[in-house]
Length: 315
Image (cartoon, rainbow, N blue to C red; front, top):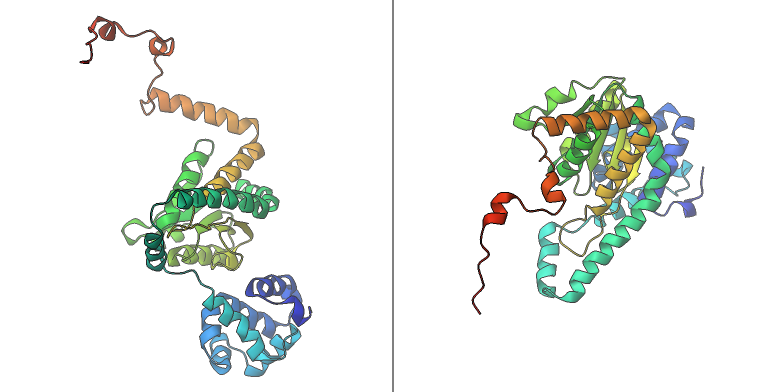
């Protein structure tokens, strides 16, 4: 096990626990699974409460902390306390701070710099896992896509474009309180793409948990390795959401969605190109797309427009 000096944050603890999970005893696995799934409870509850809730003895929690290089439970728990304190500020508080700054040119420039930084950071984080995620989705019998509230637009965009060259893609929206019914449609041979960033949607976690329970592949597109959906994911795609505004930036998420779709086209090869062409023809034929005007495209005005007199503007 690593020395305590190597574990200075909750993120590092999570990664080390995952890497060593298979080698742990069954009691340690039970304890680790609980503390990673319920980090807020660890931060605010006593050791005996956590032991009772997780189904292990208090001594097991102490030994787990020591096996990871901590002196005891209190030092181990401190990482969970620090994580809780580091949560993002509420939207209202950030909006209030934004009003105090006023509409300055510096603020506009800062927003665009943040977007550029998010794209660069997202590229560094997401690159190695894009191909793994694309392979997982391509192998699936059906791909279910879930994103709620602010993440719905990202989920919808992914599902819409993916449907251009694959039919077995569904969007989970939970309209009319039907999320539980939609979740029951996930099969072991399926894959689920779940999208969520802080503050995390409860529905997104429920979808990830349900997919995990039936053995479906879970791909999490999120902002943190310890996001609730990331803890249940087989593949994690991380994007940056930093912004001087009151609301998290979605630029990195959009770039991640488009990059994943590119990988899926490459994975499918010529078959995806043929399907895209067929879908595009159908959209034009059905009237969903405006037909291109050959006359206007050559720069020639229509007869109706040509007969209209040009009125002089008053000087």
